[in-house]
Amino acid sequence: MEADRKSQNSGPDSPEVPYWHVRTDKNGVSRQDCCRMSDFAFASISSGAAPSWIDRLTDPARRVVVLVLPAGWVGEWREFPEPQWIVPLSGRWFVETMDGTRVEMGPGELSFGNDQNTRPDHRGRRGHRSGTVGDEPAVLMLVQVERGPDSGRPCLPG
Image (tube, rainbow, N blue to C red; front, side, top):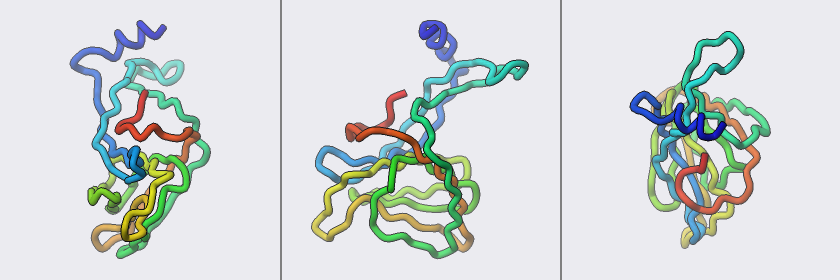
């Protein structure tokens, strides 16, 4: 079965989907890395459905939360409460990590927030800060997942 999956997802037509990974490195500093999902198989999602590219992520979802961040909203430095996928539905938002990286995202872009267990820097900042960009609210869907402590490596394993 695994060999079949690997043969189905190799080739020039297999997609790659970018996402940002907010993580804690081995020194307790939050960082962001641009990563790509690439473990897709061309298959039917259900009986009778035409085949499409599918990557079934292995972390079970714990809950789904929808946030509406008002225009001008900025949340101060904190860690994500638990590992979570952030999916912007409308508007734009930013996330800034302790290493100074600031990434702005809108609909069609993804981020995986996993910056638990950071260590305060010399200014007392931990984790990340985020906020809206522009003059409209940002609507975000959070998919919180069950995941053990992260190794601090950039990009998630399949």
